[in-house]
Image (cartoon, rainbow, N blue to C red; front, side):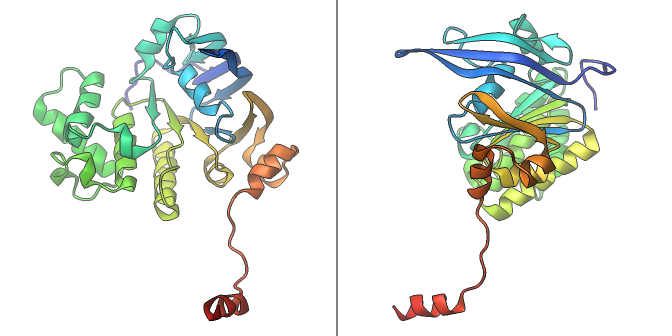
Amino acid sequence: MATDVSPLDGVPLLDVENLQIELITSHGVIRAVDGVSFTVREGETVTLIGESGSGKSTTAMGVLRLLPEGLAVLSGSVRIAGRDVVADPRAARALRGRTVSLIPQDPMTALSPVHTIGRQLGDALRLRHPGLSRAETREKGTELLAQVRIPRPETRWKAYPHQFSGGMLQRILIAVALAAEPRLLIADEPTSALDATVQAGVLDLLMELQEVEGIGMLMITHDLGVARVVSDRIHVMKEGRFVESGPAGTIVDRPAEPYTRALLAAVPRLGAWDEDGLTGAVAR
């Protein structure tokens, strides 16, 4: 996989130190992220998990410098492939869509409804390879669609988003992210709008791509069931801070904090089959 940044021995793909993000609102200044630190290395998945409003998506948008410049104040350091995007916001623009890509949440709204899939994927490819001809763009785009398991990709180039299921749209968003040939993927709730079967397929695809390409991944989720499947390390976030961090197995099997145990308790589980209860419900 081609990249704009040569490998740096011992340097993480993403190195976040004491990141603070303050949001300026009509009700005053809110510290949405309060001094978090973590790293992501090649070939590993690090997950930020917490309930809605805990600050995990704000952290991801801050790492990418996608928060409104006049309304968000960042401090600390965020180094992507060794370049500090807090100290130098221009570095973020040079790295986005090349070294690092975002898989946004909610596939039903992340794509333009008035442009074809080919147009949107082609734009991402030409951002990475400006000299591509129309035929080359379509060829590479079709290969990407096949890579993310879109059936009959050669027939889907001129299709619109409304002609795809939610699961297929999520795969297309992954293809758009991969068009940049990134070393680092940031996946913001990539399965939250999908049913359990489709969710499992998307997670399987992400892990397969990571194994083949060796990319690092920062996963944002509120679901410890998802984190259990994909993560090497987990950071549990509450009110802008990490309350617990460690290897995925330790966090899931032996959580130390009540908040983490509460998140685990919220994961749905299949109970024992209650034949008498079912019969009683039918009788009523």
